[in-house]
Amino acid sequence: MIIDCDVHINPTSKCPMEPFVPPRYREAFAAKQTSAPGHGYANPFGVHRRDIEPIEDAADLMRVHLDPLNITYALLQPGPTIHASLIHAIDVANGYAQAANDWLIANFLEKSPRFLGSVAVNMNDPAAAAAEIRRVGGHPQMVQVLTNGESTHLYGHRYYNPIYEACCEMGLVFAVHPGAEGSLNSTTPVGRPSSYFEWHNSLPLNFQGHLGSLIAEGTFERFPELRVLLVEGGVSWLAPFLWRVDKNFKALRSTVPWLKERPSEYVFRHCRMTTQPVEEPDNPEHLVSLFSMIHAGRTVCFSTDFPHWDFDNPARAFPSCMPKEMKNRILYDNAAELFGLPARPKVETQEVVKQ
Amino acid sequence: MSAEPEKPCQSLLVAFAEAEAPKSPKRRDKEVAVGNASEIPVGKCKIVQIGHLSIGLFHLEEGFYALRNDCPHQGAELCKGSIHGTHRPSDVTVFDPAYKGRIVRCPWHGWEFDIVSGKGLYNAKDRVPTYEVRVGPDGELTLLV
Image (cartoon, rainbow over all chains, first blue to last red; front, side):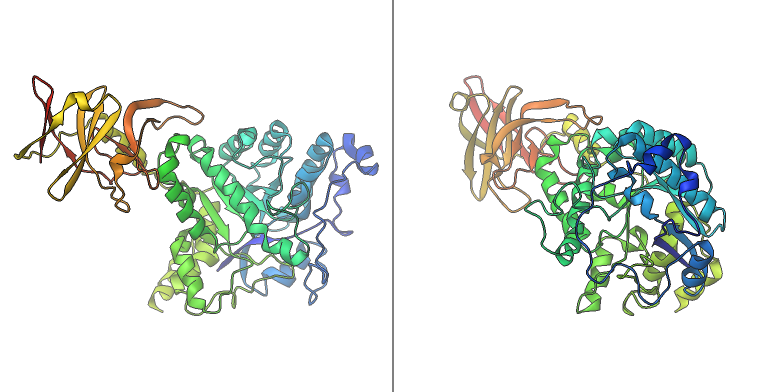
């Protein structure tokens, strides 16, 4: 059994978003007040897989992706949801988030219980974001609140506390997915990359910034129920990053006195990472070692990034030297536990152990 | 909908509980004269060598205390570090100053130790041995090692 934690969908002519735009924002939408900055790094070869037709609706997604790969649940990370917070006009962005949520529910969540939803919010209006989380977050298939890694503040900033409070109240994970990094700030603190290649390589820096901020600002102390999912931000950097943070903590704890345990302990308890694009070291055992260092058997969740160019095939993404139990927990159990989904049937678990 | 987070271990609370209720130094019988109290102003430390042992004598507001001059991390001369206060574990955004003049910060990596209890204030387990210091009627300092 597989839970795919990163599946992208977008409005199409068969399932357009326009009918879901709240009436008071329709004129603003028509006047293109939904404009937003872009990061400016185009993949010269496109970002969509060339071996499949564009996905037009839920039925296409089921037929092309979920069924052939035996994916039990797909966590949908809609394009509009990832980008909503980049829209310059704050009120229009709020309306855009509402439209994205109602569009997602009608076109996907209500078509199959195998689709798991992401609540769109405008991070630049935390009060409105919290209200939107409470408006749609009770849908039984909504499992997370989603935004991208580009933001006005690092995500540990108290400005965002109303959003985390609403996530905890509604039992939703807070998820970060790349897509707009570079739109407001450089993706590296030193200067702007020169190519899409360089831009893509630098995405984990952004995730490290947000994670370091969530730790140091005491977000997990303030919100003990908060769970964070870092999607497509890389996994293999986490162990050395946490070693550094834990070591610095020994000298600098008194500057962040609200932290009552080692930073890595907060991360392993509160954060989960998705695999794609899985790192592929020359020696595959090195990947397994790195995964072991961050307790991947409980912290890492599988994802494909369907239908994008750097897709991971669940049957081939992990090296054969990865222990079966770790692999099965990554493919299903960790996400099932994070999102409160049914456990793998016992029979399958036993078979796995026997192997 | 999301699963219950695992229970935190809160190791810093353990460390500060030990500093709050410091145990007496281990009982030792050998008495060594190590000078006079007048040599060490409040807030200062004098390092003495007794055989293979290097020990820091600290004059705090609370009295005289002694710590082994050896950081458990990489063996720096801990007692040559600067003397500070710290912040107690607190609610988010709150700074709660504590132990003013009672914390030595290792000169190599800045790890904090409570001079009175010898406890490392960064995890539940690390500590530095402490020694009893007796002050005689004319300020004579005697170290028990």
